[in-house]
Image (cartoon, rainbow, N blue to C red; front, top):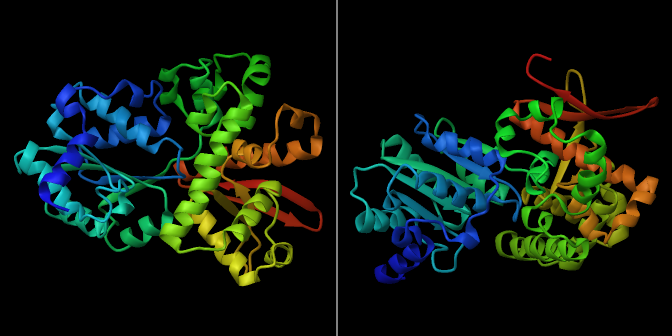
Length: 392
């Protein structure tokens, strides 16, 4: 692509260069807790880059645009460069070339620039380019996002240590859903993960009545969480996440073509979310080989749509651990299985939903504190979650 066309595409993505503000349609009013952490990192003293990872539609792009809004209060618009690298006009372009074009057109080479790189895996060699910026003391502050674990961790395994930090952005927690519903205050985000639960502004009975059912049915992803109608929210979840992430990403990035098997497998994981994976059973139900099922489960985890916990062990790890599988969010399970408010009358189904929601919150808490989440099962029964934190 010629230079003039690339510059036009970059300029189109950075409308604040002309209007000095983020377009209202893109300016989401409530910042996620991960957004506060990312902003502190970007404006702090450390030259290390930050990589935000998580499922599609979880709000990573929104976080970047909210950070643009905050940066505009203290710096010039031309010092902020946002690049959506899976945009058809920019996909496949070397990251270094795009940033060089930006610097030559908007910034002098030796002045601080804030680089916000959305879906960074869309640019070949991105990890090596970021490494060269950090190692060469380039005046860049970098915040990047991505939705596909192998295209992020594979590229960063050799280049990343000591040069950038990685943070997983999960689906909305109950606190963030309360923010969207106007039942919590944004300033309380700085107290997480403990303060809000110890001193909630909303009485517990009201939480149960007004918050909890909506959260379990439609509350995990920002766009669907704002829908008033559960049916509309579920349609959005199925189209944006269930279909696009499964079909598009699996085809484009992983070369997968067995979409009927994949959908069948994903629905089974939704039905049995919190159960121990058994590839032989899944193989028998889907008609695919156990090896194919195992590979698909790995790919689903790499899109952040499916997570797992391993059994707790002392001493040497088990040779063949049996993981428990979870959908990344309870509301996605509700959308895939078309569950409405009637689900709250089904005690058996509620068990799956509650444990899925608990896993989402506890897994995020464990990651944020450098811990690990597991489960325990023996002949006496099962403990759903064991959390090991540093020192305890």
